[in-house]
Image (cartoon, rainbow, N blue to C red; front, side):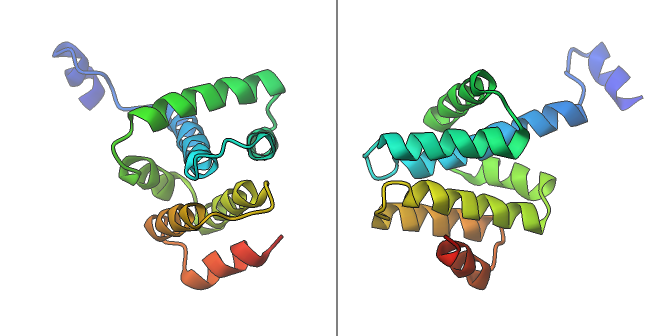
Length: 144
């Protein structure tokens, strides 16, 4: 009923569950992309791990993973901060899924066999915003 009133006045109805899932995918990919690019070294190994993580997480083909990453890059380049993306993920992901995302971020950071302090900082910041405990953050860092 509320959506009907909104449509009368030109407002768009609330996002569907499918839209929210797609937004969560894009936000996840954007955060992984941020870890990949934060140290200024766009190493091929990092890109490969990032693409593998996207494909594995949602059983995507290579083309679908590339399309998702392209959309995530666009979102990341226009984002002022991480709060909107992280808020969406806190609402959409349970605790285990948020911890898995932190593990994936560490895998991207470790892909070139060197973790830059900027990478660790961004992963710590995002983990905090995702309400991932410090012990889970450390466990994810060491699980390699």
